[in-house]
Length: 152
Image (cartoon, rainbow, N blue to C red):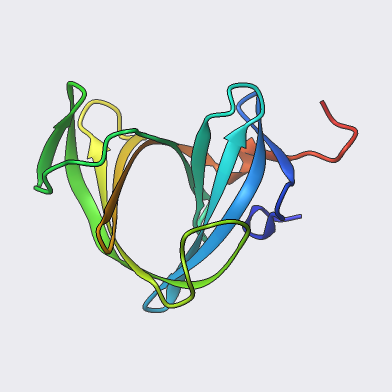
């Protein structure tokens, strides 16, 4: 099974940690699309986003409690410097699971790279009157293992 077609409640392993798939949102922008899964760590119960692109790249984001941030070219977040490298609008094409999006909803996204570690990413998503901030790290899709019910 491909990581672009994970199912609700499926268990996956990323870098030794097990996660349960809570929901999925498919975004489209122009002629491209990407999938965003909301995951729950099976041990800490913290929630994460797994953003999977058509390329071999994926980003595992840890959701931050903060929601106030000033959008500019360079951001200092928790003592780390980030520079804007991508922004755009994603339109919800489809979804499954418990989520607060609807087909046709649009988010503005801003992706920042760490100046110290290009594999660290700061993501800011603006939905109507809600701002979500996440810190992520780039992983390879091959690092995502889909587990069956008998795997540990």
